[in-house]
Amino acid sequence: MMQKEKLRTIRKQKNYTQQQVADAIATDVSNYSRKENGDVKITKEEWNKLSKFLSVSLGDIYEEEVSKKNTNEDSQKITSVIPEDDLNVELIRNLLDYITLLKEENTRLKKEFKN
Image 1: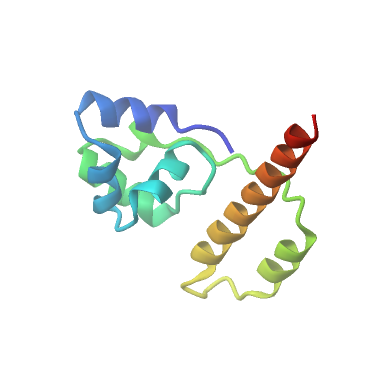
Image 2: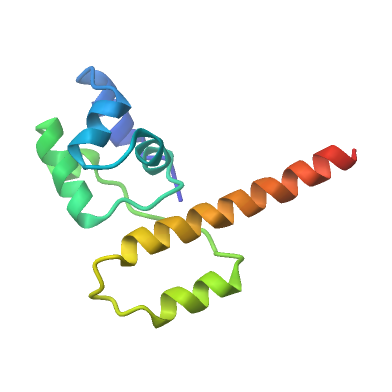
């Protein structure tokens, strides 16, 4: 996924901290930071809340989600069996994405440690 430059720029122009924006969408600051960095998907509902909180149009901040190919086959299987109307789908997907990132970082650190 790509960084949300439009969102970050407007947040900074309006002198809001990541913590303030995280509070506005009812998440913790580390999760919001991952959203702004493009590591975690921002839901439609969150985009709407962000637009209202920052007093801008959705078009001023919205950037298309470009998903990375998930290398973890298990997480793909899990998300494929979850019904789309389940309220926890986004949370589960975000956690699975985060687990994948942690595994990638772990692999990178192991290689770095060997050298």
